Image 1 (cartoon, one colour):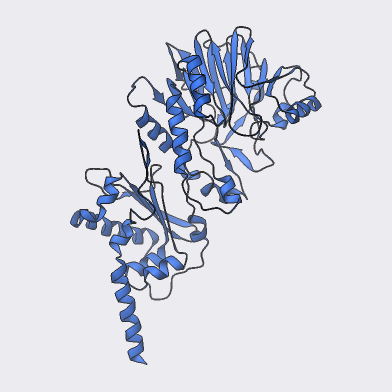
Image 2 (cartoon, rainbow, N blue to C red; image 1 turned 135 degrees about the vertical axis):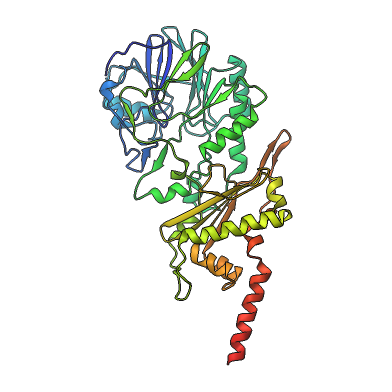
Length: 462
């Protein structure tokens, strides 16, 4: 580790996920440091993937740990740090004992709303509704304040109390992802958690951050656990930032921005700015891409299905099947726009993915556009998503099968994340209020009549 000259009196160096370095005045605070992947018993890796040369990082003066979860309290990283460093933790006997066993002796346990002043830098510890000992922290120095909420869940009263204390913040690092890990573990229905997601949005808006960045949740499952990446992360970061921008649009001075491994923020000219060069010692190997973590609860089952093309079906490729459907959708939208009026009224971004084994192909339609058209590829803003086996879809379009067969064979999955956040609350259309556009293309009645005709013809041949 080295003693770099500070660019300003307040800098934030992002190592990835919740792992941050705050270089504030005379202090260098390592918060929830994780240097290596995989972490958390080999389950997770920081996303976007990065590697760290800790010898190139600024030398710490303090360590700050928000809570005991192993994507924040990483024993292997702590074991590589100087044991004489002061460590600040919540009042958690398990963490305190583990740190003592590692050889740390200067350990400070803090409580909700406690203030700690370190060489003119003030730390103010904010609470959480969660049951384990856990804190966020407001770091203030020379009139600049940053609120890192980490994973905390704040009540309306606690949030109002903190905002009243500071008025506003130069940066808020806000939780944003309503994780569905427990839902998957307990085999509960996999639906988009609208109420919890909106709660994150509203609280981020009420924090009065001049700059708000989505915090933590910069990780993903690694192999062989990676099948959960399509199940546990229901929101895309892109959609959260867009939704938050809509909520705070009344104040053009407020901004929303992403924060990834290697990002380096400095406070200059009254605002935080992201430098073009990455943090020295952090190498980010690729950029954030929403498709690596997109919520697709039906994809695993359909990709793994045994449905194969039968003889006589022709030689269409996956892309040709999708192009055919795209042409049918565009034609229907031109000839019969009333068929899609509900999708337009709710500003739906519809996305369909067709699968053939591991191969997939997609297009999406932003119905809020003046003239909606199918656009190749997926969208991080999709609010209605359909996943379907390619050959089952082809049979449906050619009237060789019925909707009953498509649905009950497991070849079709759809889910919606359609809602509108208004001053009087959350408005959602209901599970059946908006029909999949595919229903307007391959009408249930037409396929049912074709099925009956086939079965009657078979009876006549007997």
